[in-house]
Image 1: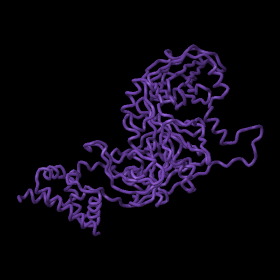
Image 2: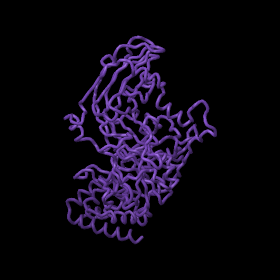
Image 3: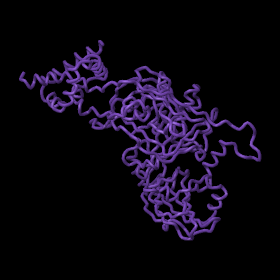
Image 4: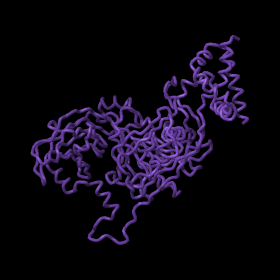
Length: 559
């Protein structure tokens, strides 16, 4: 062997460093729960609503119901499209490439108000201009508008075409610098836009696009693509702590280009704000978002669950809803994302929880639970156990894209489905603290639970980059980076997960304790590209690498 080969032999001892570094100090938080407001001790007089009913009605009718129905009785031009009907070739083509968690397709419009709205109608306090938009076979609609042209006193309302709800008012102030304002989701295949103005001239605005929901969501009638029958309703849960924690779970409606996606998110416990409530951070999966998402248009819908002891679900229009978020941080390799709501979360009729978390990763065999909204349906839960850790998931045949350091959970009760993505992995063996966020899995079956497993993004690794936001004593560090570049030698050797875990123990419990070992770690990362090329081209080098890896794994297994 020449000098170069001997040098390579020494450096290859550091191959074990491709395993992720163990975390140092442990951080954790338990869940915080705020009970719902107490009902009045006496029956309200004169038929007044109790506080919860009043709040629900205000969510449904920020504009008086009588006004809504009065405006809807006025004539309005109808803009209609059948491009997305079930039999449409356009629809069939769009669905071919639609990710499983997507629920709506979009249409670019770029229409001026004059192309949609009819003439003015005089109403109390000014004039109203109306326009109805219809998309055949839609379960719900969302409209994207540009309100930067509105003047003072001009307001836009979005109305359920049957008069069941109103949303608004939206003004120039809502537009700010954002020319892409997503209006709230309205159920059904029709939506009415109402421009109210003190002037008898049509206000200036643009209708940028329309989302057509092809999946049913928030509906009370049973549909053909309802969630699998072996899903377990959260109302069947008997643990009071889990029921309290479940109030911190929401459905996300996410604008992606002009379409929409649905995922699940969890409210995290952390330091209090000025209102004595934790900052409204939501944990979810990065694949739910991406570069084409308009975060200002994300809706978080709360408390969508069956009533206990029945199949009745609440009216969508009466559910608490937050509109608008900011992306705080994400990690594409782990498949995790942290977003922040732009407004405070309402304490609903079930109360509200900010869910606990722990940087101490779970172990194989730990009991776990997941609370989620499959197919954007009412809240479900699944129970199982951790069956693997440090999992690497390939998302294509050549493994050029994928996720790392994931936690595998196998379900013995319940399942997950599209829409469940992003839901928290709750470690039942550790006070139901969050251990991960749902990333991917195979198609689940009600006939057998043998292959009903999912992979979750590791919360402990994601905490490295968001820790200072959740605990003032923690630091925000550089996030976990892919080891596909630095660990290519290990990939070439085709080592099993068990062997890699033993190498991690060897690194941390033996070489990592010495200055020389730490230097080898640094040298390995510096020379990783050269090492991989050498092992790939030199048969002797490959044999040496395999011997070193075997010895290191055996040492680690003995620690």
